[in-house]
Amino acid sequence: MNDFILNTANEIGIFYVFFVATLLVVNSIAKLAFDTEAPTKTRKIIMFSSFIIFFAFWIAGGKLRYLVLYTFFAFGFYDFIGRYVEKGIVLLMFWINKKFKKFKLWFKSLFDFRLFNK
Image 1 (cartoon, one colour):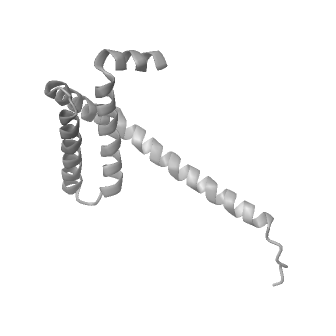
Image 2: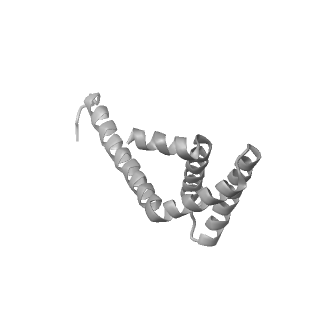
Image 3: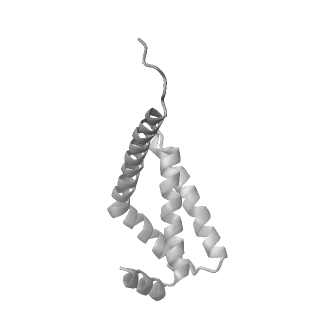
């Protein structure tokens, strides 16, 4: 798998791999942070953040046609696979949080030396 990732990065350029990764991460965080009952507001926030990232990478030396191509790739990848990965990560975070709370209660109970007078 590492060879596949490194070969892909060498073929298309690490700059564009970093662009796609940044675009996916920032949009996922924006969606998680600002997801409200009004999906049009979330779309506007994601469009704005995508434009800022696109513009920053264009100014940094990215070729316009490749940035447009990989932007469409990133959104297509997100629609096809990314949303399920994102949901899985959120579920994993909730599961870890639940287990941590149970561990914390168990650890507190080890040092609870109160007399149990009722």
